[in-house]
Image (cartoon, rainbow, N blue to C red; front, side, top):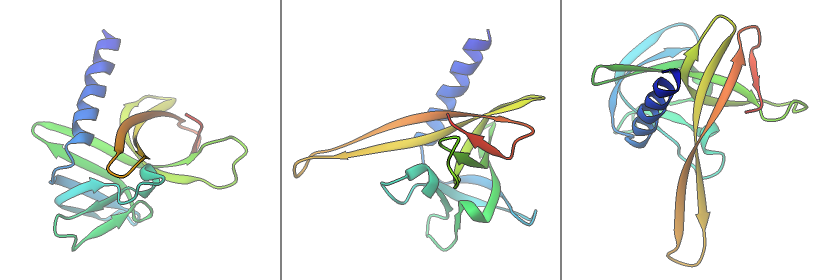
Amino acid sequence: MLLKQKFTFLLLFLVTISCFGQEKMIITFNDGTQKTGEYIIRKPTFAESSSRTIVVTKDKSERYELDQFLSVEVHKDDKILFYKVIDVKVNFNDQKTKKKLGLLAYSGEKISVYYVAETIHTGGTVGMHMISGSYETYIKRKKDDIVTGK
């Protein structure tokens, strides 16, 4: 039963990430204030796409980068998806962290599980271009501020 729930949740996540449509969102900023509006979650560059994620209005009059907010609630149909900005160290020995926007998939007493959408762009000869999407899973212990590894 748990596997079926995880699969259903992952499928919902993949559909939501694919639909980059403008939706009602509640953004919680670093100072605790909130703003509600119609926004799009998007990745403006090909390189390091998950750490370059932004929340922007359709007319681009408002633009928020990951270091400006703590979380985003996406209200889609009758579902609410909760995204949180997480600090990630790819390797244990890394000195620097990267901010990524993770979909909260599970939150328990000791751990939280986040899905982070990654996009891989490959080039080739003129006119050849391939885009493939992948999703990384990050597990964060409640006592830690930084997520290490995948």
